[in-house]
Image 1 (cartoon, rainbow, N blue to C red):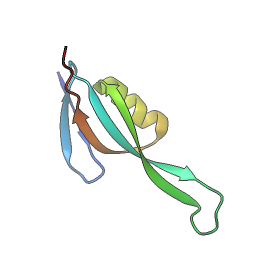
Image 2: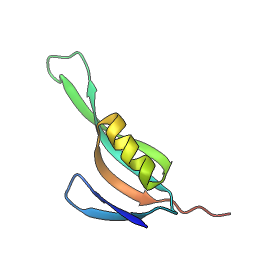
Image 3: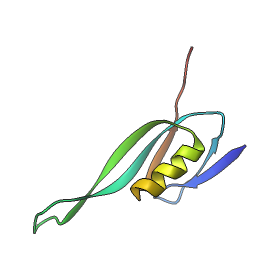
Length: 74
């Protein structure tokens, strides 16, 4: 079964339940500075299946920047 995610730039990516992915989430970083009250940075997460990707997006309130399939070799 596959799930479709939409990236920050509007691109749609299909991912599959039986594979693992590396994702990048654009997340706010709050700092105490009058010049940059909030900065954004990309946090990378590894070895996620589609259900875990959904949980990470919700938990961290991030914007999905990229999804890359991880090539697991035995």
